[in-house]
Length: 113
Length: 125
Image (tube, rainbow over all chains, first blue to last red; front, side):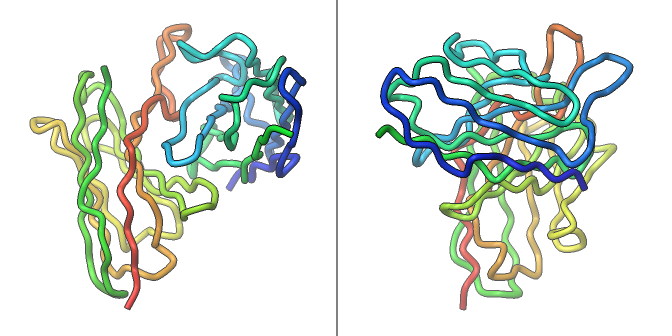
C-alpha cells in the first residue's frame, strides 16, 4: 500500500499569512504515460464532508478560490494558501489515487492565531 | 446539482449486520464508479470500497475484506454497502463518494469529486 504522510500536523497562522502544507507519498504516484501525479487535496470543515480542492496535484476544482494552489510531482506535494482567510479554518487531506487501496494522509489542521 | 444522500446508519451490536444505502441524483449514475469512505469521529479518512459503473469490478480495504459487500442498482440510482460481522473498530461516519472526471484528460479517475453528508455507524454492546 502507498503511505501518505502529511506535515505539519497542525498550523496556527494569522489572517493574511501564507499557509503551506506538505504531503509525501511512499512511492512515486506519477504515471509515466500521461505525466500526471495521481494526487488530490481535500478540505474538511467541522461537521462537513470533505470537499475536493485539487486533482492531478495542481488542477483546481471548479469554484475553489485562486488563493489556493497545488504543486509537486512524483512523491512530494504542496498545498499553499497565499493569504489565509477565516473561512479556510479546516483540516486538509491529501489522497493518492494511483493504486488501490486509495490512501489518505493524516491531515493538517489549520487554525487562526 | 449532484446529490448523494446516505442512510441506514445506527447503533448495532458487535457481530451483527447493517446495510447502508446512498441515493444519487443530479448526474448520470451509471457513468461513474462509486466509493465508500469512512471516518472515525475526530480522526482521518479511510477508503473502504469501490464499485465500477457496471458492477463488473469491486475493491475493498483489507480492514473490511470478507465482511463488507458493495453493490449498486443503476436502475434506482442507488449504491449499497452490506456490512456483516461488525466490529467496534468499524464505528465511523460512512460517506458515499462519486469518482472524478477530468475534462482535461477525458478520463475518469479515483479522486472523489462529490461526497454525501455521511451516515454514522456505531458498533457497541
